[in-house]
Image 1 (cartoon, rainbow, N blue to C red):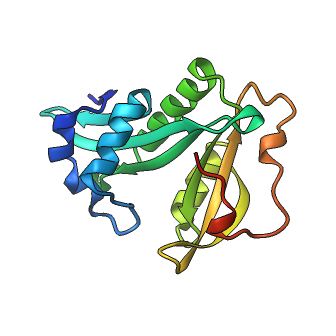
Image 2: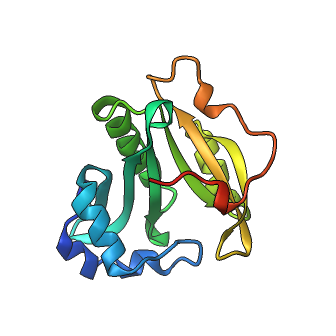
Length: 174
C-alpha cells in the first residue's frame, strides 16, 4: 500500500534513486531545504511498504493578484512505480492545496518540449500549453509552460495561450 506524506529532512538522504531519470531535474541540497522550509505543504513523498521512496512532488505558491498560483517545481516517480497513477495522485494533492487552502487561480509547471510522455500525462490531467519558453533548459532545450485553471479562475483567463514564444528573461519570478 502506498503512503503519501509530507517530505521531511531525512528523505533528502533517501530519494536520490528517484532522481536517476535523465528527464528529472535535480537540484542542490540547499534548494530542496529552501522548499521544505518555505512551502512544506507543497512537498510530499510517496512511500511503498518498507519505507522505499516511490516518488515525490515539490512545489510552491507565488505571484500576485490574478497571477497568484501554485507551481510544480518537480514531480517524479521511480521507473518501477510508473503507470500506477502515482504522479496523478501527487499532482491532485498539490492542485487541491493550491485551490482550497491558498485560493490560487491556477497551477503551472514547466516541462521539456521533447518529453512527450509527460506532456501527454499533463494534458490528461487537464493542463494546456500556455506558452513555449525558448532555451529554458540549460540554455539549450525549449520548455513548455503548462497551466491548469482552478476554481477561483471562473473565466479561465489564466489558461488562454500566448500567441508567441517567450525567452527566460521574460518570465515573472517571485
